[in-house]
Image 1: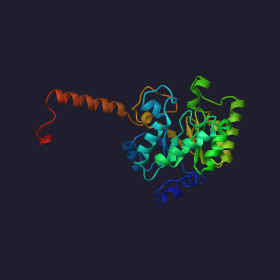
Image 2: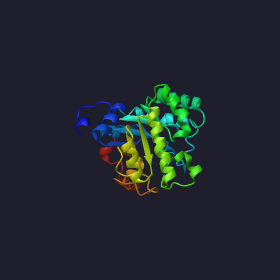
Image 3: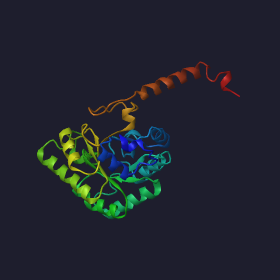
Image 4: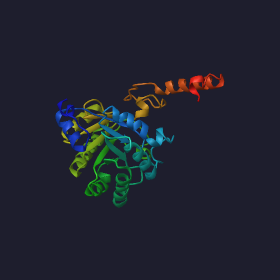
Length: 272
């Protein structure tokens, strides 16, 4: 743990690379607003992801597809204003980079200029390589994302574990190499067999961040609202709930309603 015991004031892609080399695990969580971002940054979290999962937990959509670039920029800018130490990564939303590398670059530039984020994240491998190369050519850091790619849910038709057969596992491994060779600084591996994630992690020089990919990766990421128990309808095997804040909020609001209706709030000390 020697590397991060030095006084790092800002986590960068270089810091993450050193963490992998030193065997220090990378801790990453999502955030979508200023207040949560400030709380996360105060804990010395390594990476904060402004995920397109905001479509689910903030806007109530069933998939991540509807969220727009403008909405991601809004969430990204809100988070960046609350962060001083963590590396901030913003997802490029569906439709802003697939099949059109010029649009991909324009989208990435908007995110970097209008949010102040440190990097962007894209889903996919060989099929988006042209977009990856064009974005990287502008000096914008990219985190890749392989395995279960939620933006492709209509193609797969299920959120089941990916790369369980040899052919898909081989393709994922090749995609990970392609992303590394292109210049991506890290890759997220979502919902794939732990053995495959371990193999890919061992072969790559860049860090791997797992979500439902077992322990033998360089770091882990969870959706903040899921791990805190704010959202309760999502319970995959890989999710560990560290708190039940949703229940505490419901209890606090119920107590507030009771106090208001009984004229207990505000009392003499809570007025002017």
